[in-house]
Image (cartoon, rainbow, N blue to C red; front, side, top):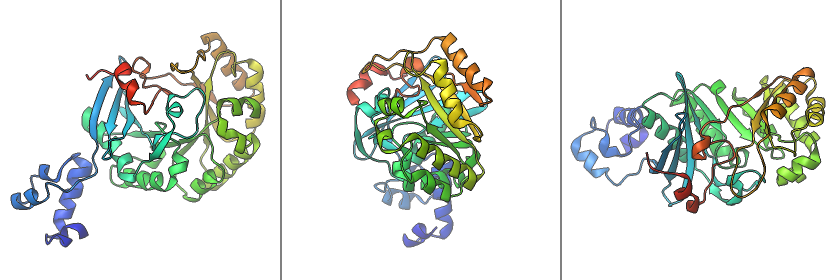
Amino acid sequence: MTWAEEHHQPAYRGQQIYQWIYQRSARSLTEITVLPKQWRSELAAVPVGRSQLHHRAAAQDGTVKYLLRLGDGQIIETVGIPSGKRLTVCVSSQVGCAMACDFCATGKGGFLRHLATHEIIDQVLTVQEDFQQRVSNLVFMGMGEPLLNLQNVLAAVRSLNEDVGIGQRSITISTVGIPQQILKLAQAHLQITLAVSLHASNQQVRTQLVPSAAHYPLESLLQDCRTYVRETGRRVTFEYIVLAGVNDRPEHAVELAQHLRGFQSHVNLIPYNPISEVDYQRPSPQALQQFLKALQGHHIAASIRRSRGLDRDAACGQLRASRSAEANSLKIS
């Protein structure tokens, strides 16, 4: 409203611009036909913060991966995941990632910069526009570590909740764990779901898979998660990528269960999704089931997550910033 008045227009013009950007996914102010024609022509050079679609690839299961070109030419990935009446968007929070998790394609390209709030929101609007369907769920599980860009992520969450209409309880923020940041997230008192990428049942294996864990002992991470549950009343989801011969044995499940005993939590078991840079292997279905049964036998809530978009490198751990990988993994559909 204020912006419109600063441009010598009635306040309601600001409301019209707001509605067209958030509800109709307008990419330019010249598209907003309810504005006076003369004013629209004057606003032609004013950006609204929308990215450009660089590539689009659809997987056989209906999942769609998008490469979006930002204003400075950087490329990020986001994924639309349809499931019946639900439409989930997996958004990125950074260009690249500094965590360098050994099994993850994003970390292989290194970290370039944080995403601005509008660049996060734009990903959701892009998917919503393409699917012609309201986005119902949102997961910060794309490129980057959300808690290293916490200020912009929280601003995006509030906007996506208030302006786009995604319920906070339908939003998940994923992290490998950054010292002090989980406690800062708890202080925001949101009703989102916190998903912690654990991936190991002990500090030694966790540090092998997640190098940053060397600075954040497993017990300290779990203590912060307990504080988060106490402060927010929300349970924590633990993500556990299962790699054959590395962390998939029944004794690993028992060790994990001991850490989580009495914890208000849920464990998502994720079969490893292959990337070209490393030669980890997916676990066998039998090993996955044995791991799941071992957790459940120790009264730990757990389930196996089915990978979506695997044939288009759109599954967990497969998103990357490398432009050289685009031609190999994507075709415009």
